[in-house]
Length: 236
Image (cartoon, rainbow, N blue to C red; front, side, top):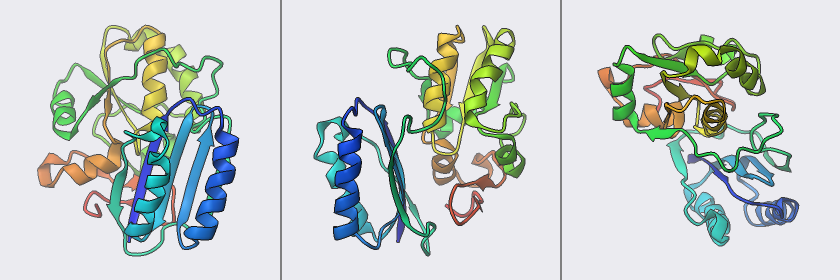
């Protein structure tokens, strides 16, 4: 059994049609699949669990649309279902940031793999910013990471506005659970003039998969939005 997660930003003006079609396909052809698929005019954000073969078939549905042809999919081994049901919804955003500017013309922060991330962390001039909420931070984080002390991701824009002077002309490394929050946050930071921004590619969960032993700098566990509640770096 596997857990897959994927997100992709694309012009999906037909998200309502996509939602209706995907609901029909999964309920009829893949009734054992569980998880969440969020669709919006800006793209898709999903986490699904079930048998590998059925998950592969669902990915093929997305791949049939050129807009998702190169969408990366991350896979994690699980022993049992981590979601109780399937939920497919069309929303205003695939991750709520709640700013008026869609940020579509701004490049994202530069992706760093696990080794590059560790190298940047070793630079004492780097500011490491946790892009998650305070509860998630308390469960676990990177050493010396800044806790923005927000209750919701949508509050981070205000945090950046209020702390912009501290971040300007600094190397800033941002991270989140799976990467999607950093996609929006990095763009917003660049819009505010904070140009030297880096993000952990694939997020914390990919970092757990790509690092072992002392190479993994994480402290504590990582909160996840499913039945497991949190995972340790040994779990993946």
